[in-house]
Image (cartoon, rainbow, N blue to C red; front, top):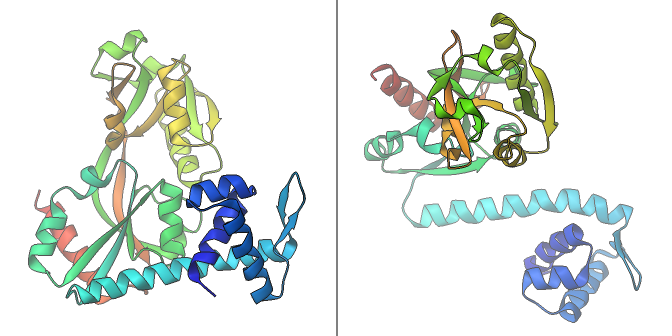
Length: 298
């Protein structure tokens, strides 16, 4: 069975439309249909329920999808490992970092590490904080960089503190506060606060924001739940509300949105290297020791 058929299966399972899936894969619909029939024949199982108007996964198809995604990831990861070995590297380190935080969190350290350990290849896994957490939990990353530590399942991690990241607020540029470079939390007492829905990481950030606002003497309005950070950014541009983020999110500052530093005491979060307890390699240990030492020297 060709590996391409398995990849095509996952795309069709996402689109549930042969025409759309075929366009995404740059093949014709009849070719995709033949490949799926061949896959079902090989497995001796019906993966899809087809009609003239719809395509649905069968129960067996849903089970196959869950497991084949893991197999495809492991296959691609193995291919990457083989390419790395062919290039002459002795080992690799997979580092998870949230969107927009790569430069702020790592700075020039990767170059320093690679100059000392040229035999180790650094690979980066970038996603939203929940995706980065899951990469570590499911052994797709060797270590991750995150702020905070009170999210679910964090008891499985060990944390190596690096530095304090100041918090700030993203606010629409039409708001009078947007003319400033900084503000106090009490200046936001009449604002609607956004948070990200169904995210353990952002739930922890919202709880921290609530505690800071209470210390400033008010109960924050919200949270207005958003499905993802990008949706919150769009709403903030419209002037619908504000959201407290780490300073790395100042990259979103533009003509439509401003990032203001928060001047209140303790408006910061600890950025740490996180790795699973008792499961890290000598390569991970080298990175932790060298990075921790370099941050203390700053």
